[in-house]
Structures are given as C-alpha cells and as structure tokens.
Amino acid sequence: MRSPRECVYCHSALKGRTDKKYCCERCKSRNNYFLKKNRNADVLNIIEGRLKNNRDILSTLYLRGNHRVSKKELISKGFDFEFYTTIRGENLYNLSFYCYDYGYALTGEGDVKIFRFKALSV
Image 1: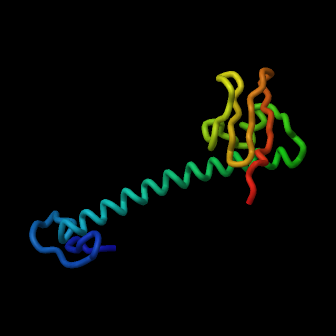
Image 2: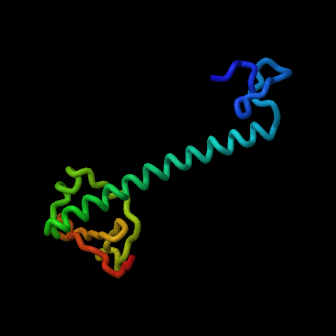
C-alpha cells in the first residue's frame, strides 16, 4: 500500500499540495488509461463468459440428440437469450440466432430448435 505522500502510479515522493495524488500529468494520464482499459476488459470478459456458457449449453444438448427443447429448459440451465454472436434470417418471423458454431431458432410452439453451423472449418 502506498503512503499518503507517494504518486499513485509510479510511487515516487510527492511535493506540493497535501491532497496531490500524482507526481506529474504523465502519471495521472497513464493511471487513468489503465483504469479505463481494465474496466473495458472486465465488461468484455463478462460478455465472453455468457456467450461461451450459451454455446456450451447448446452444444451439450445438441450432442445428446436434443435438437428441440423448451425455452424453460434452456433458461433453467442458465441460458441467456440476450447474448448471441450472429442473427440470420429471411424476415423478422424467421430468425436464427447463433452462439459461435451452434444456433437456435424459436418455434411457434414455444420450443427452441437447436442446430450446428457446419460451414466453419478449423
């Protein structure tokens, strides 16, 4: 932990006002840049985590042979319908949502049809 008279960024001794946090503008700018960068990284990690969770749920169900499940079942497993990587469709009523290489489409009966996008080659 820094003493009250050290620069927040470089920890050099501070001179001047008692409430001073940085030794110079450069340290202040760099510290604010890294704080902002870390906040952005945290948000991206949360989004990536939800996308991967959705993909894992879809792939597990698909590989078990469950190509059609209820929306309630997906939600109970932790699926979040607000996170997907791509939307495709011919019109508003015929949309497919993708989480990387697995996709789903909502059916008229309230079920979810799960499928795999096979055009990707790794």
